[in-house]
Length: 135
Length: 135
DNA sequence: TCATACTGTAATAAAATATGTTACAAATGT
DNA sequence: ACATTTGTAACATATTTTATTACAGTATGA
Figure (tube, rainbow over the protein chains, first blue to last red):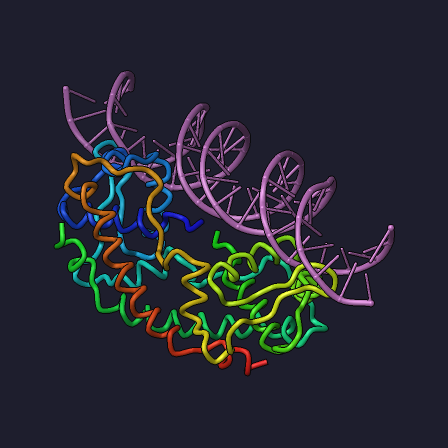
C-alpha cells in the first residue's frame, strides 16, 4: 500500500495556490478532501519544515504559501513526501551464501535509482502553478 | 507499504535463469531468499499464468523458465506484479462540491500515467538476461 | 480580559494490507 | 507403496496507514 502523503500534500498546495492571499484553516482544507484535520496539519508541518508554506496560529489563523506556486516544482513536493520510487524489496534479508541472494537488493536498488532519476527529471519540469492551473 | 512481489519475482526468475536446465523446487528458491515456500509458489503461480515459467509436480518436480531469459523484459515482470507506479491517492473520496476535490484524482492519474509510460520504456529495454548477468 | 477559533502535537485506536504458517489433496518418480 | 513436490485454501500475525481524541498554546477581537 502506498501512503496518500504525496496526494494529500498536492491537494493542500493546490488549494493554497487557488487562494494565495488567504490563510486557510486545516478544517477548511480537510473539508475539501474529506480527511481528518489533524492529518492535514501533519502534512502542513512537513511543508513548513521545508519552508514551502507558513502558518499563523490562533483565531483566523491558517496556512498560506510562502513562495510563489511557479517557484515550487512537483519534484520538491515528491521528495518531501516520498522516500523514493521503488518497486519493492522482499521483507527478509536474503541468503548471503547464495550469489543471487547476496546481490539482489543492491541490483534492485540500482535499477530503482535509475527510475528515480528519470522520474525526478520529469517532475522537475512541472510547477505547482502548472498543476494547479488544470483545475 | 509496497509489497515485495516484484522483488520476489525477480529473485525467482534470476535463479531460474542461472539454472536454465533444472527444475528448481520452491523450497530451494525459498532458501535463497529466506522466505516461506508457499509464498514462492504463489508468485510462481502468477508467472505460470503468464506463461513465463512452467512447473512439474511430484517428486523431482519444480519450476523452470519456459522461454529464454533474453526474451523476457523487466517491463513484463513489472506488469505482472505491479498495478502501476503511482505516488498514491488519498484514501477517501474528495469533496465533489469543491473544484479541486472534484478533479484532483483525475489530474493525479494523468500525472501518474505519464510517469508509467516513461518507466515502462525504461524497463522494456532491460531483459531478464541483462539483469541476471549482473550476478 | 475573556470567549472563541485556530495551530501543534502526542497518544491511542481502528482499518487496511502484506507476510507467514499450517494443512492437506493431488501429482509423479523410484 | 513411498517419498517428494506442487497447488491452494484457510487462517494467523505483523506492519503500515489512517482516524480519533485530547489538550496545551497562541492570536483575535468583542
